[in-house]
Image (cartoon, rainbow, N blue to C red; front, side, top):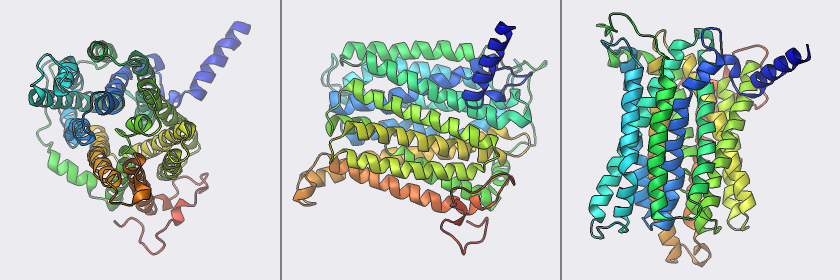
Length: 482
């Protein structure tokens, strides 16, 4: 009896405290769902490596200009607009084998593995530390190619994997299944950031090669495990729908004004939360003197904040909260968090930076899950892949443009400040970074403006508008207009 009670207690505790764990059903049990979610872990590993660890190493240890680093980190996001097309293609993939989603996952895995395999050699050659000291141009071109390959692989794996999860899950639980997969993405990012930070605590070029290539091997193993016997084969193969047309399906999806406004808000918020991606770790190193291991730990704090945001969103959605209001609350938290990051420099406070980074993750998690669930609610019947692809395309495209601009803004404003053209009081390493943080605060305020009309509709009578977001700040605007 006691053993049975203990078993029931831990099962209930797991369902209670793991965000969206109650998305599991008899058709898709939790152990199978968690194994499928491993593809998100591999994507999280690649994201941490490219957007956190390598950008710090390239800027601080290898001396690569921040503008070039920003451009390289943004290169994988060139494939972001293709996510909607990838989702559509996987919805209508013709295969003799009988699979629609798995071929895209495998192809994406090959791209990820190939890009990571030669990336460290390209980076060392680009910095002039390779055996060919004069091969900087070749190294730069090879590094750009490796980043492109990894980006293409991440887009293929993530979009097809999320679509496969929606295929396997009952319709009523699909939004929560997708949300659980994003929790696993953050879990993978959290543990990857801790592990990569420890491995590269004392930087060494040979260790850099081993870490990146080891990530390539782990990525292949994880993705194979995730997709193994998940998608049922269709006897006789899958066939393409002759009436399927991407252009017409896309026009039908974005036709409602409410959908377009949501995508605009998503783009603004993604840019607002995304500009800091390549700058937080260099900021900690340049301004506050943190080591590689310490700055990589910032990504762990960011991931922990994101997981906290997902946990809060899980409880709110269980109480029938409006996902638009959850996203708006995330934007508010992000504004406060960026303000703390701004003040961490004049106060020389690494602790304040850490709290701010955690707050950025918390706000970003709330915003991501709110907009994700809202987009899923807008999906047309049988078009889950297109809806997920649209969310991923807008989110990643906006983040990519923001990342590219952030490096250029940091370099240009920082150069003006250090030259004294902005005044003697602005001659500080933190000036260029602080300008970017203020731009992000402005973008998040614009996000609240875009979300205001969407948050006016109460989707469930049990929900109370605790934020007052429905009254901010467009009293005279017709509901649903853009």
